[in-house]
Amino acid sequence: MLGAKTTRTLARRSIMEALPQGKERRLVLRLLNYWRDLGRDESFPALGDLDPDAMGDMWPFCFVLRVNAAVTASALTYIGPEILADCDEAPAEPTLETLPDATLIKHATAFVGQTLRRKVPITKGGEFIDHRGRAIQFRSIVLPLAEDGRTVDHLLGAANCRELPKD
Amino acid sequence: MTTMVSFELHTYLGGNWKIDSIFDDRSLAMSEAKRIEERGRTAAVRVVEEVYDEVTQEVQSRTIYRSTKMDSDNSQALERQAENRREVMAAPKKSTGRERIAQKKIRKQQAKTQGQYVMLIMKLGIIVLVGISLLVVLRMFAEGV
Image (tube, rainbow over all chains, first blue to last red; front, top):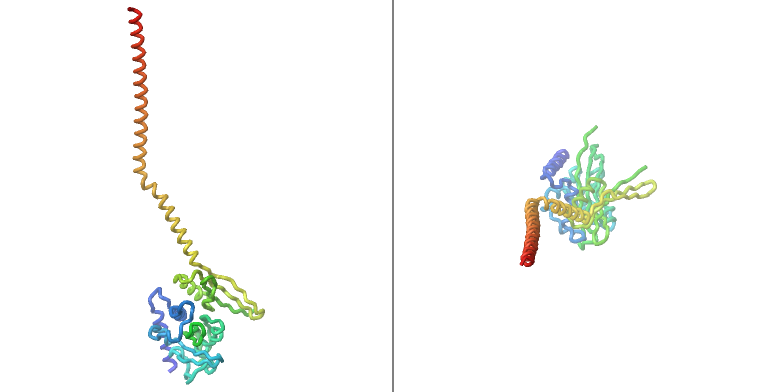
């Protein structure tokens, strides 16, 4: 099952790499551009501005987090199937603290606190060993969303990854 | 020494620099800076590298990229100026033929005018000589009579 999901992830990546030449292919920059286009003047876009249809092949790699006063209790209201590909079981009501360790979603949300403090999009990448002992390289982005344009109430994130070849 | 490097993308809007986004990858930050620059909605863009030393807890910042719309406008203006200069330099070459003809005409007219003056002086000289000769002849006749 897990293998099938990984294959799907790779297939998705191939679709992204097959985008027309000259068009930005990197997921984090594409999502950042989309987010920027939604913004009004200098204010943040709102959750309601997101249009999964318009986001196309980016949406399955995205997650949405509802910000809680206690950051670790913030709930993930949407996790794209591609991000969950490396999770054996998706948590029923996922919050930042209940996310399984050594998974893409865990690493992709690791700098949520920093994004909330700085109130700017942050993108980070890195490597980790997943629960199957595979070396995974990932890149992720977290972007602020605000109903009133200023007070961040949700975060939009995205991440993709690839398995690193064994030595 | 343990250090953390990040790249802050700053945009200049309304007279202030503002942090637009933060990257941990230089090439991503540079790509985004150039894309924002191309969109032209901000007056200036810069990428600042921040190196945080976990031991000393010091942050060292340096601007690794800066490009402004003003710079771009200036370079475009310089390019336009250079083009104008090139056109001006090229312009006399185009009209050389016509100018040569005009200069020939002027020289011809000048030569013609000079010739006319010489003829006039010669005529005057002849008239004066004829006049003097007539006066001498008349005087001789008068003295003879």
